[in-house]
Length: 201
Ligand code: GAR
Image 1 (tube, rainbow, N blue to C red):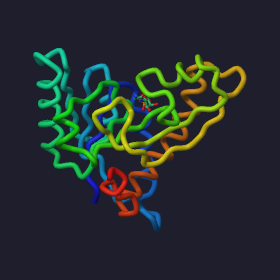
Image 2 (image 1 turned 120 degrees about the horizontal axis):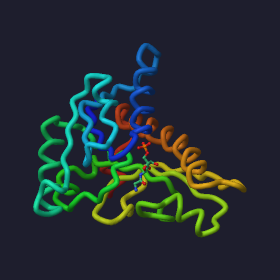
Image 3 (image 1 turned 60 degrees about the horizontal axis):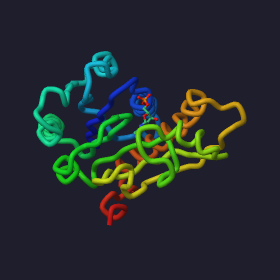
């Protein structure tokens, strides 16, 4: 069983979808042999109800409680490592993780991003795509490195921008694809068809 720790900052709708996909696959002839063993957040405002509902352990490590980013990252790493994950997923985790965190966990440290990287990196990818007047954007799942959304790409898919799209509508359409990519990636990790070491080489 692939053990996952997932970190979120907000609503966690992609995580909810992953949990539901794993559940739905049980009892089929191709179950996803993965389990979310802990859910972490950088803010108590994140939707940790998701964890409570399912009896999954959760934790919050707030940057404001530490003298600097490195100390926060070390504390976050310690909490993650308690659960001995096979992979850690940043799923709408809206903070850059410090180098020691990346070095300890990569390449088994994944992120999802609402754009077709390397296009539109950063925290406002959907807004930036609209502001650029692009006619398409995308969704990406990648390995985290020390840059801002620069890590090796695992899977990505194009999504058209439709006339009349606003940020919320476009982001919702992107998330539908992100959820598929995330579930596929977790399945691939569990089945051994996604090899993060090779992807990160
Ligand atoms: C997702 O679209 C994810 O890709 C994005 O935040 C959203 C989280 O949604 N992450 C980033 O933009 C990271 N740069 P959710 O909380 O509803 O799952």
